[in-house]
Image (tube, rainbow, N blue to C red; front, side, top):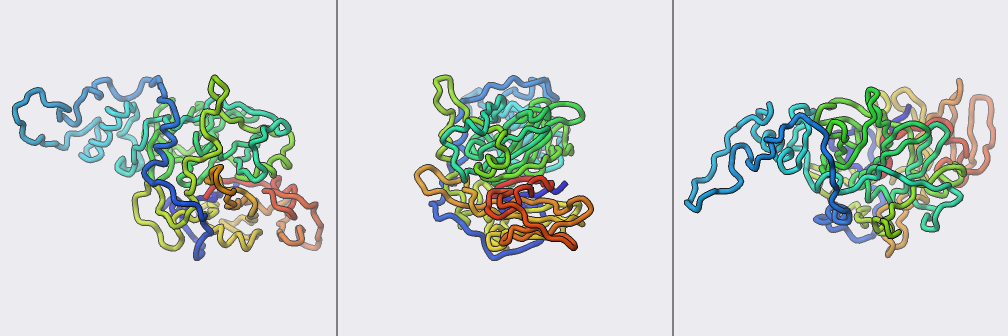
Length: 438
């Protein structure tokens, strides 16, 4: 199975993937830069404060006692007091004083029952932004048939396409940019469909772990400017772009990444005429729960801007928010800048011992354009295996042909991801992705 992603360059430049290819730059938007201090808070402000029933966990009720590392939160007397001395008191087995302080703050103020003694990353690398599930995940998704799709769906609107058990579903990024997580069951398989707007990365996971079905939410935390998810069964924290539990009982557990693709709505309709479309969430009065036509991160396509809430040193080989598609096969990781792919829409390559083809569609719109602006075209890239039976296919875009040893056959005009002249059935060759986006 091929794992690939088209993400922001900074996501791979911080050690999540190794950049093995280079390009000068990636085409950006002329839209004005976003307000870096209000983007994620805007998403949270649009959501009602969630009520969460916490399952029993490893922390006792005494941890929310109104004190922090032995320092009272208020002074009971008006008599001047000397500055408090904070000692390196261990918090539930955490002996590093800084991490102990962070753990107790998460437990006390965030009411987390996560086992912070189990972690694969430093708690200091995790940034709390908003309360958990304030960016509300979709737990009861509603769908309609492709043929009955609402008029608000534009041909070039990007959707996450996922197929399992004979059922194909489209999840519009215009919704995921507001909700970030959809817990669903497709063809009998429990899945979690995720999208991190700050990394523009989409992944679909199997949410069954050791026979246990997990339900995911947004923790309100970021790490390297990437979504940190949490599961409601153990309150473990998960890095979205890797699918790995990084804090809590399940630390080290890896979710299975399932094949998916970000394609245009038009391409999905043509590929899956019997498919289903995720409907916008509505309130009791019938109004939409969010302003889905106006994304909270409008203008985030501007490659001149520093990534929102990113802490660290950006790799200078590409703009930090430039789009790249990344491949991870076996121990080999490769990145292909969209700027390069826009001029080379079909790339035949071999990575990690597997023959692959990358197809670029220059008609897919950006999810970061609001209704007041003309649609920003960002393009989309999809990766397929070139193996077909015992043979290896070679793809070209201009003639819409496939070439095999000793034979040549013209394929029907169509699209795997929406561009004229590409093989209609290329999507059946086998594709996989870690993430989709910038």
